[in-house]
Image (cartoon, rainbow, N blue to C red; front, side, top):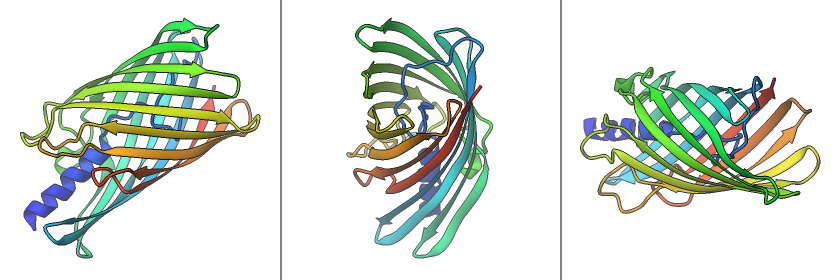
Length: 262
């Protein structure tokens, strides 16, 4: 029971700490767009996940979610400062019996996005996004990493009149992971946006990242679909659903949020 509990706690912690890139909700893949000097936005997001698996013939179930606030501010026309503050919770069960339940503040994340190349005629641009997480979450409860961690993401965007494509290649490093876990995590994803109407966008996203466990043969992969609806020039509403493409990924995650620009 103790080992299973530790495994469930680790799985929950790794799920909630997958180094988000702070893409336009509900996308996981970021774009190269910046706010502009002196301008910014606030994103308030919610996500709820559910996952089932059988470990040593024991049926295990994890549920939980996160509420986050992300502030993005334009330091210049091509550089944004991004910070996120998450509140997270999860509950683990074995054969229907609760074995762990925690909630609390997660690790605060800080990033810079620098759009270093842009060809407006071709609709193509590149950006680099380094960042760190600050260990404000409780590591013993599975709500934090316990140490400052670093990451960097290369972002490419191609925009057309009715659609846009985004590609991310990211790397993160965390020395606090146990010996049985990978300290170096790579991830890649592709996102797309289609303008359905002047106010409605359809979005999709597919991605994969290194499995946290060293000896695992399958790397977590997901597929996401959603919509973004613009109430006006300053406010967007979004909904999305993310599904696991293999057993290494969380089964289902529902996402919702609101974005306000100022």
